[in-house]
Image (cartoon, rainbow, N blue to C red; front, top):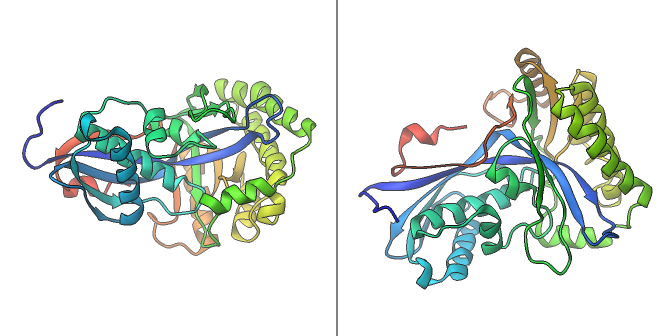
Amino acid sequence: MTPWPNGQAVFVEAPARLHFGVLDLRGALGRSFGGIGAAAPAPTLLVSACPADTLEVAGEDVDRAAGFAHRFLAHYGPGNGGGGVRLHVHRTLPPHSGLGSGTQLALAVARALAECCGVATDAPALARAVGRGRRSAIGTWTFTGGGLVLEGGRRPESDGVAPLLARLPFPPAWRCVVAVPEAAPGISGEEEADALAELARPPECDVERVAHLVLMALLPALAEADLATFGAALREIQEITGRWFASVQGGTFAPGPSEELVRRMAEWGASGVGQSSWGPAVYGIVDGEAAGLRLAERVRALLGVTDVAGRVYEGPFRTDGARVWRAREHPSTLLGVP
């Protein structure tokens, strides 16, 4: 492990993740869930850590961050470098909004502590250490890199993270608008587990259709930069999988602002539109910077958002995942990273 200069800390900045859809709730072939998604252009969270005599946690969402830190240190133990750490959560993601706030915070804390403790590990190992990735692995794989990710679901007897099957870059010209309306928070944790247990198994023809759309429409269209075909496939995937969850969330999309935003962004020219996970976050994909800025402004006007850096975000899809670097503790020039 490289010696730590006085006053330096390791910083981890992790992007929000967008969940585009689930592949299979039936599990008839031995794997459940699976899915497609991507790292969002923004927002991001930011944590820092440096060695200390004991575990100290400060900043935002302290209780949850401390819980993840304790799990990491208990998993690796004192014999693996699990000593004291001073952890600071500078910025979190909007909670329970469909952007993976819990998983990204857990992985960022784990990565920061791994750096401090000299533990060599990868994202799936980090996820296991802090108890994430038990259903979807989209957040784990967007933490490691950019582009669209496709993961293959988990076997019920396995405690591992679902495997990454494909990662394809987005064309640089495509822009994504992410909106987080003021609405009831999406479900998570035990509530999510209970809701999933209540869902009826979807028709086999639905599951087959989603797989066909992903393999023969969505991925080829992305590889060929064909936004129209990509968007049409993504919309159909969202419609099908949204129906699977309708009995719990009240409709194909979360009723209210999320449902309206999906409809409006499609009317305003977004080729790919949908709701991320349980919402309320929604997204729209367009071609070109000017189109992205126009769509973002219309969404802000609809939501009454005046702060440009607020609950509506716009930009190209990320080409990387979490960023990790060392610098002096709490440098003001880094705390403004979006």
